[in-house]
Length: 465
Image (cartoon, rainbow, N blue to C red; front, side):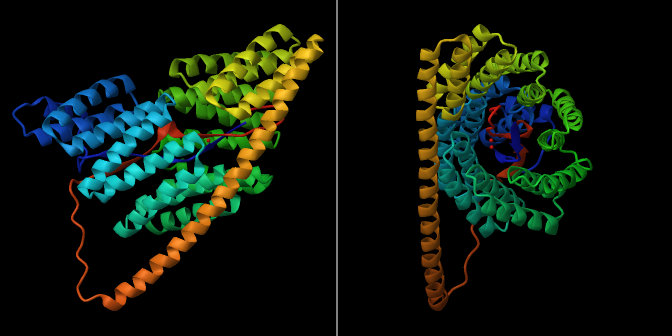
């Protein structure tokens, strides 16, 4: 099954107030205006009107923004360009390339001493590390971001940061720490009346409770999230929440309720023209059908999902689709088709280093060749699967050890900082001046495609910002 966590990505815009798209584009095209005004107009137009709805046009105009900003030596324009290039690269699953762009944006924002822009860069870098599975790095950047947001007393930003840290801990399997940060997010969101964030917190806590087998508690919290989001204008997050209500219902074997909620989610994604959301829900509907041994229906869903992911060039999801298509063919006793699709899944997952899917593809091939009567080939894939199990276990152990070392370092750094603060209070003889920021740095908080995918494994199925 798929578990869709709320993870926030931040798009930075250099304009301090929203204007309609036509007027923003008109500013860019008006060559009589100052260069800085034109750059701000184009940057705002791309971030508010194109970056999620029309990536191709966003890429073309970001190229223009970059070239013009480079020519005019305008740092804000260059920072915006790098940020946009990063987001567009992440659409294609090119997270390492996205990181390179974000690092360049961070250098510029630090040079500008613009804390808002620095915090957005740190958040987005953490988001990319989450996608790459480097959760310790994601924690490092999210916590750097949180410190800056606290200095700024930016409560909205702190709420998102608490949520993102909780999500990273969730990915690491550290449920206790994840819940602590989700609860901090909810508490602060209640203080300022930020209801969408309250819903996000309940939503993510519900998914941890699901993982722990606390189904009734999970249902209570996901319904709290749904109740809040039904009164908000956040359609992306509403679609996400319906999907996870269905996810929890499916875990409770209430397939009828699961189907109803999945279809509600799919309907919203279609209305929003969100290709990623549509592909994800088709995949999830396929899993639901496969859970009920309705292989014909499942194959249709996985096939449609595969077409979408192939257009987006999402290799991980393509591998997952081929795997489940292969499993469906095993269920139908169509062994040749099963082998063909599971081999495709194995090849792709091996190439991109998705070892959990690679392991499950080996299991699929072992089962297929066993049913075919080719015990020798079946044994080969069983051996490969066992090797991959060891790799997965070793990776998880290494990550836990690194996490412990990281937490020890954070504690040590915290104690050192406290000593410095005490010394500073003793020696302080002048008032602290407020920092002056360059640029307005309006932050627009969005959910990428309405969701961040967390893959979960089970004995039958393989499936997160």
